[in-house]
Amino acid sequence: MPSPSPSQPLTRRRHVGWTLALLAFAQLITALDFNIVFVALPEIGRDLGFSTHTLQWVTSAYAVTYGGFLLLGGRAADLLGRRRLFVTALLLYAVSSLVGGLAESSGLLVAARAVQGLGGALLFPATLSLVNTLFAEGPERNRALAIWSGAGASGLCLGSLLGGLLTDAFGWEAVFYVNVPLAGAGALLAYTLIPADGARQRGRSFDLPGAVTVTAGVTLLAFALIQGPESGWTSPVILAGFAFAAVLLAAFLVIEARSRDPLMPLRLLGNRSLSGSMAITLIFGATLNAVPYFLTLYFQSIHGYSPLMTGAAFLVPSLMIAAGTQIGERMATRTGMRLTLLTGIVTGAAGTALLATGMSAGGSYWNVLPGIVVMGFGQGLTWTGMWIAAASGVAAGEQGVASGMASTALQVGTALGLAVLVAVAARDTTGLAGEALRGETTGGLRVAIYVAAVGILLSAFLALTFRRREASGAQPVHVDA
Image (cartoon, rainbow, N blue to C red; front, side, top):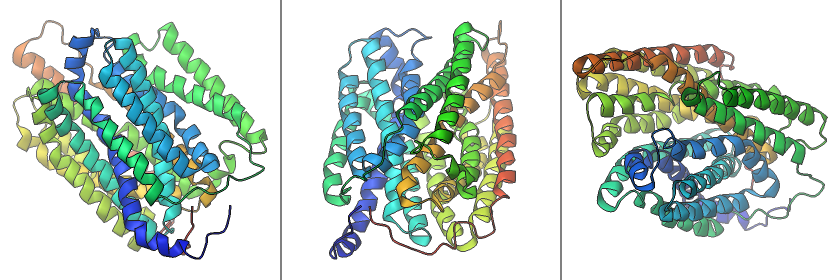
């Protein structure tokens, strides 16, 4: 890669704040899109003729392609250029969102959501690797990751609120159209605020066999986990999905071990900070990342909240997550990763258990508020800590694939956690109605959240494997993109 000109450091210092703002804005877009569609689902189903069974694919199509292409997106950022991929991903988001808003059939909308998922799979690792390469490892990067994480928390909150407002005022199409100017503006600003990628590295090949096997394998795994509760875990389609996913992922590991220029260098798994973070991220996805789904059911199905009221109910957890991300950055810098992650994990588990305790068919928002506050703060601490850990000790040229590895663990964990916890929450409610039905449903939700709290605590043992000053004592060496 060409050496930077003498003027580049000055330019970098002058624009670094705006560059970070743009990267945080991109994270806000992906987080916004995660929630904004949920509240519009009933209206989408009525207008486009989705059945009860097929409506889930408005969200599942996004999740399957997002999970399947994350690792490929991370490696592409390293090899093709992070700014190039950042812009490409945002343009994919803009175009697919426009098509989604214009869709007049269920098939076209599902296809548009799948392309949105691809855009997200390219954008997330590109954005995260840009943060990790433009900011020096140590306090500077920790602070940047905290701001990036806080933007994600804000997006989750705004998604619920904005989705309710747009759907009520303009119809479900507006939840797609809103992405078009946001993503388009981000793509244009990238050419001014993000350093150019420079010449591509020579002698580097794209590991096509590895890319095909891992993308197909993770996509099939995500499909089987998401569709399993609906089709039945023993149905031929789901069993075949798991079997083919296992074969493809095993083939991927063999290919990577033999490749001269692998898509995912297996030696990266020897980085204790990255591998430990991936394990914690997997559990985080299966537990803390899955709890909002059950909280949404509790608000809407048990207490009859409207979409807008549900969005307002998520204001407090979003604010606490944002606060936790900022405190997490300071803790990581001053005390190291082990204490930061342990504090976040234990706090998150305690808050989740407290949340379950406060849930009842006849209760109110105030009963669950203490658990929401404690859980949200712990979630924010853990979120920032695990991304700092995932980037620590990884060379600049491999930050994209490291980001893809960690984010794939998060996505697979979320799909796995939802599948398990939905099964735990399921209760036989045949013949029940009124208060009896609400009570039985609440009981199932409460048990699922208790199980999530226990699962969160398991990751505390993983946090203990970090050194006391892991990822906090690194020497700050700037790396230009």
